[in-house]
Length: 73
Image 1 (tube, one colour):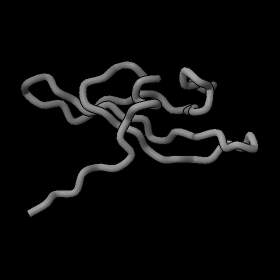
Image 2 (spheres, one colour):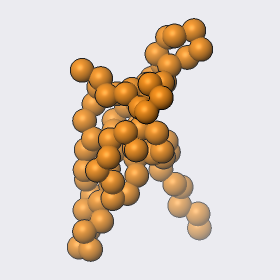
Image 3 (cartoon, helix red, strand yellow):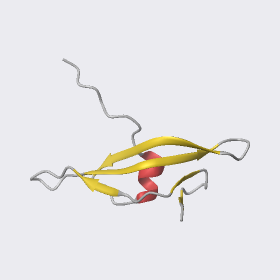
Image 4 (cartoon, rainbow, N blue to C red):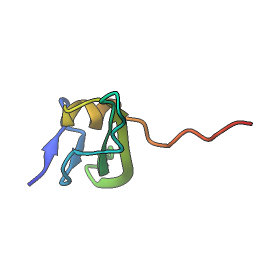
């Protein structure tokens, strides 16, 4: 069963997962994979989406980050 975004153009069949908690109660929320609907109607895998401290699956699909930041030295 899929969960769809507000506009119906993003979907996922994966659960919202929670990981990497710290002593202050912060945690990483992520969805392993989301799909975007193309103009022709086909669905294409777009990879992981993640945010910090969120339990709203639709918010993560619509606003989550695609990549993890790279450390700059």
